Length: 168
Image (cartoon, rainbow, N blue to C red; front, side):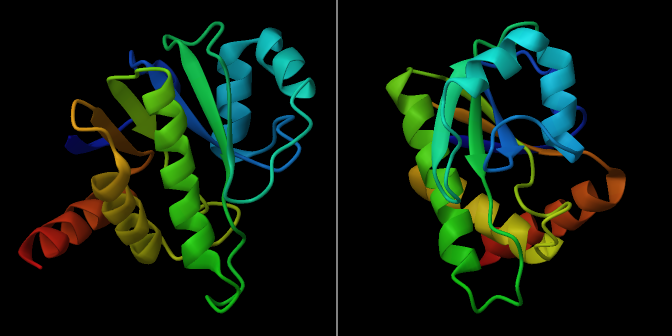
């Protein structure tokens, strides 16, 4: 398994699957969710309507449609409520369940945004730590996983977290 931290737009990556930090309706929203829906086209929303939503921590798979990937894995991260409402466990489950779907579809390359760290207010440093630790624990041996930071500040913070985890 290879974990790579990159900065960029997840909707432009040519990978087997991208992960969408979705809301529980799976019908699109703000942030990366809205960007993915816009880039994928109306077929993504049509397929999402057939899925019946998704509980926090779980993941569901759709086609990639107009995106340069085969699949979109939709996962619903936890809203941050101070850290005492199972947020870490739920966020870990997002990565674990998303990677399990990727393995089922024999994906060799998967790209994740930083789940829950936007409008759900999960502290970025802790979200990065959970993401990196979970990806290393649950990704398949022959899988390359990209953790995609949208902005430079998150990318630089991610480099610091990755360096610290590598020293532990």
